[in-house]
Amino acid sequence: MGKGKRLKKLRKTSEASFSDKFQETFTRNFQKELQNSELWDEIVAQYGEKRAMELIRECKAEVKTGMEEK
Image (cartoon, rainbow, N blue to C red; front, side, top):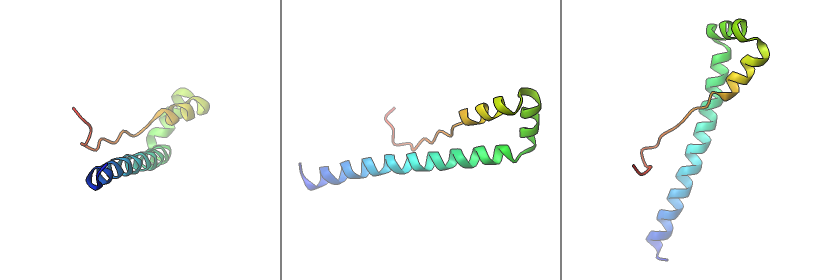
């Protein structure tokens, strides 16, 4: 395997890990902001505290890097 091929493989794996970390952080921030919003009170009133927490855990951010194959 040549140097170019090794570097390309290394960049590909590091970009995936960066996007994964970014996605996790973005998800946590979104969930925290949702809990602090006025909408949260409505969700709790409609579904109850326990179900509202389950729903918020299901909210996940999806980050598209544009580097995926189409």
